Length: 74
Image 1: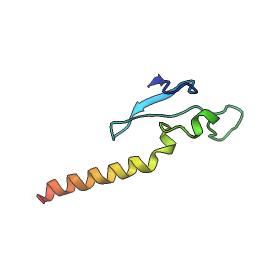
Image 2: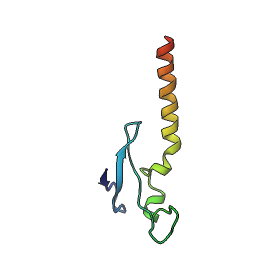
Image 3: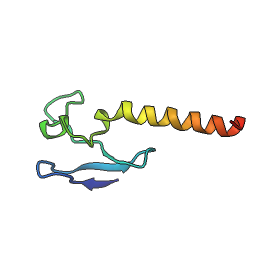
Image 4: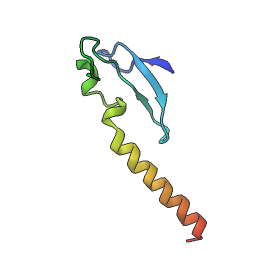
């Protein structure tokens, strides 16, 4: 994983490529809290993985449907 700075407010999170071939960021958490609490700059970030989980799940379902169609021959 590499550091990823994608806008002027970003201090750099850990980036990786997801199954939909887009680069997402794991963000950075606030060390003050024991639970996973993201820094303010990360909470509204369009690249934060947590903000894109539904989009990635939809992509995976679409891909499974496409694969199933090719197996069946439709």
